[in-house]
Image: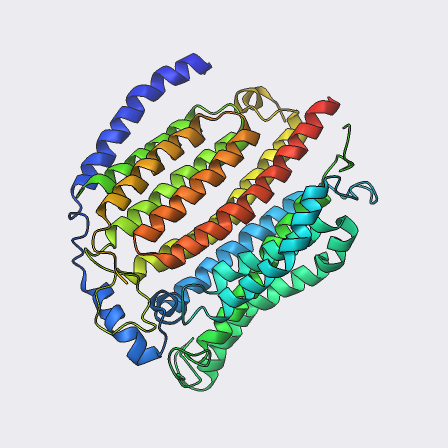
Length: 245
Length: 114
Length: 86
């Protein structure tokens, strides 16, 4: 089908889809008029019951922990697929993708690699108390490591972002979630039941085994993102030498 | 104001689909796909909004203050982080096609054999 | 602290979201598009904050500024290098 025929067919199809979408959206209750009881119940119950002041983290890791396990494995599978596709092409010779030319980029990387890492770790650690959690903090930690690459060169990045280390870390993170859930199963409680007692809400020692699940998710997300960046950089044809092509 | 967020979510969704359908570059297509995904985030948050509600964080806040729905927020935040890896997978496929066929234009890729 | 009337802020953020998303789709060159996409990500962060969703806003901020640009920029660079050789 030529391009013009496709555009002519697209217009009525898009119009029909718009009509359907807006007709569907018109059936929703008015904005701000939230009716379902579930949200109100969780807001009331999360802090007294689970001792977590962040109700969203309580839902993600405790009330709906099993769904988060599924999401984690989507992430795992997507990264494995990407890595397989990229590694099938074979590695390019070492030594070409060496240094970053621009001084501004290196200064930025030097200044911000440490703070980004610390902020990421803080986001993960206090995920059960204030906004944050394993998912957000994991990506921020990965960002901190990538800034090391911006500040130095590829060989220093390789020391941290080694394939074998990252594969192991990602697997440990994903597997850790399941192991923590199975540990509850072994002691006679349902899968992923909160084993350790809930601590004092508002502090780091709250929410029992959710803290461990939080850290294992953060490990997996950080390792997965770093692995993606590493694999994309590895199979990269052009030398990074600044000035000219 | 009572229908505006839903209307905006619908508009973003349709604009993203238009971009995917009329794209001439596979990387442009992947980014239009992220625009469509973001419309679902806006829709989910608009559904969970409670009038006059604050964030569902209760540190230092008296229990019982009105807060918005935390469940749709949990769905949205895991979705955002997972979508990055999905887009990376799509880009890896696009790079594969580029290595085989020498182009990232979906129109020319259709003529390429084998 | 709950601001008494968030409605003007929300309407502004929604309007900006419409403009930014249209701009992302209409920018055809991928290198320019990734910058516009990062700006759209910032508009979405603002939108999520005025919708009282700080966790989601953090998630979008981290992803839209760190993860997306890195992955897409490397893909663009690789496509460009391949084109120059052929």
